[in-house]
Amino acid sequence: MIEILFLLSALISVFSLSAITVYLFAKGFPAIWEIGIMNFIFGMEWNPTADNPSYGIFPMIYASAAGTVGAVFLSVPVGLSAAVLLAAVAPPSLANFLRPCVDLMSGIPSVVYGYFGLTVIVPLISEYLGGPGNSLLAVIVLLSVMILPTIIKISENSLRTVPVEIIQGSYALGAAKMETVLKVMIPAAGSGILSSIVLGIGRAIGETMAVILVCGNAAQIPRSVLDMVRPMTANIALEMSYADPFHESVLFGTGVVLFMFIAAVNIVINVLSGNAAKFKDKPPHYLL
Image (cartoon, rainbow, N blue to C red):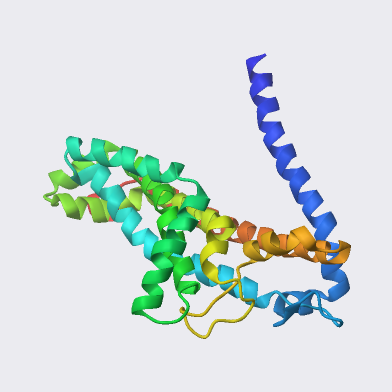
């Protein structure tokens, strides 16, 4: 009976995902087909309320991709370093103090992050770098902070699951502590670290409220990181309330593109994670 209960629980998750996927494609794909897939994805102009409306979402795709890549570029080195600190370097007293702080960061609502970005990050960018402050750079900085807890927690747990025999073998061969961390522990925990990056990417590209407050909401290709942008999630949230039926279908089409992008990233990273997991089956070549 318990096995059946667990199976039903798993099937509920699968059914929920399937229902969301079917509904999203049913609502969005007809509009994409009518506009034209190439015109929709690579169109440079978004003006759904004009007499001759335009539905090109490439500026939003570019903004979402640039914000996500920039956030990952900033947060992964910091998050991985913090995970190494908590898992292998910090004394227990310091680690026990820092872990609740990381957990607290995970529980802060998105709108609070957005308000912090609007009142702190945006004015700092405007004062010291110029421009309006609401910009791609503000999006990158804010998202990098928001995905840090995910990367830190999962990476730390992965580092803690590295077989102790491999670590002891490294020490027995004369490797220093940091050499063991960099050349043994991190490669052995590679699949978990990549999983943390996947979840961080999903959080970054799917974030809405915080991004709306700092991005500037201009549907354009930015010429620099100081220009205003409008990611796909912000575009959906801003225009869904007043959209007519076809406009609403187009916004669902934007959600379809976002869904496909996240699915592609997950597939690629999962393949890499599977390759990294093979490391745990045998010690590194220099320990054989």
